[in-house]
Image (cartoon, rainbow, N blue to C red; front, side, top):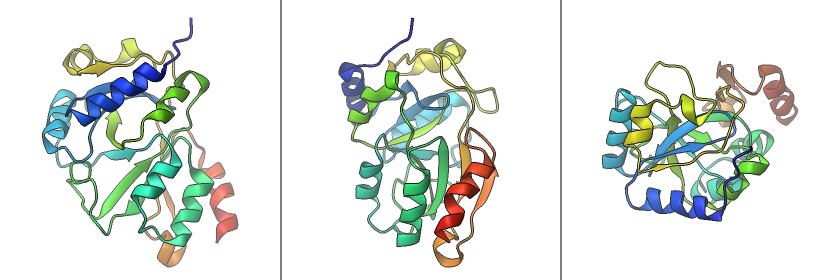
Length: 210
């Protein structure tokens, strides 16, 4: 049986984020754990649950590209073009963060923002109703394998979270990490971690924009 999230799940996630909670949730790649990206207390708790050093940055996820663009009006035109070419999709984009937004997510490097906008499958489409950004990391213990199904999420995370959403089996390959911090100035980009989107497809989408 395929687990399908509904509007009530999206509302529960939004409420969890707004009230300082930590949630386990499904994305387009693997299961994640999340909190409000400006809530230092919630972020500290999330990092403790994962056993992750607090100085390591986390990505900020929006469930719709328009929400990301509204929250980041300072992005250069070249970067906007790259975002439209790659998002939504199974990628994490490293961008310059000149206004030092999302302090809890970017604590280890305030000048860099990791941005995620997942490509939601039919069973996860209700999450598009979540208008808030979220600090997100994979729902595993630091250094351990990623979770493809909810049962793969360590009990420590499931029991310690305020909300757990089951989206059924996920693809299981983490996002491809692409460094776009020199894209506006020099047109340069690098794949820092190969993942769900092959480097050849990244090149195919970005090269025509140069």
